Image (tube, rainbow, N blue to C red; front, top):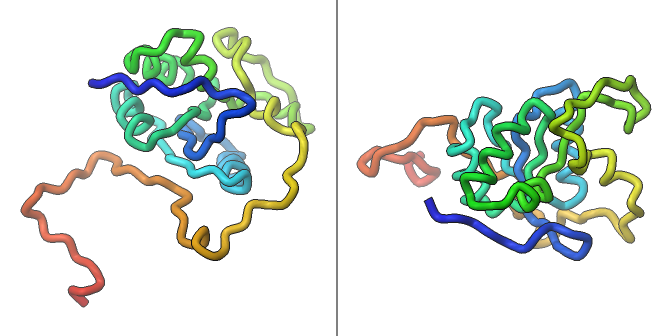
Length: 167
C-alpha cells in the first residue's frame, strides 16, 4: 500500500474532504449536517471497518481529517500508522466527537484518556462566522457532498450495469 502524505491541517489549510468514521450516536445526523453546512464533502466510513479498509477510503477519497468517536480512536490511529504517519501527524488529522455533550450545553461525561490532547468538535465551534453561508447554486448545485463507498459488494468487470439508457 502506498503512503498518502499531505500537508498538516492548520488554520490556513483548505479542507475539501473529511472522513466521518465510527460515528454512531444520537447526534450523528447533526454532525453530518454541520460538516455539509461548513462546505465540506464527507465520506462516511462504516463503523465496523478495519484500519486497512479505513486507510483505503481515507486515501481514495482524498480526505484531510477523520472525525471519529472516542471508541473509534484505536482504529483511526492504526489507520494513520499504516499510512506511514507519525503519531503526532496522525493525531493532527483527528477530530474527536466526545461522549460529553457539555460543548453543546448538554450533560458532561468522562473522557477516555486516549482522547486527551486531541482536537474535539467543540474546539471548532465559535471560531468566528462566515461572511456568507455556503451556497449551493450554479455549478455548485451539482457538486458531490457525500462520497459513498460500498460496504463490501464489488462488481466484476462482466457484470451488466443498468443506467437510464436501458429504460
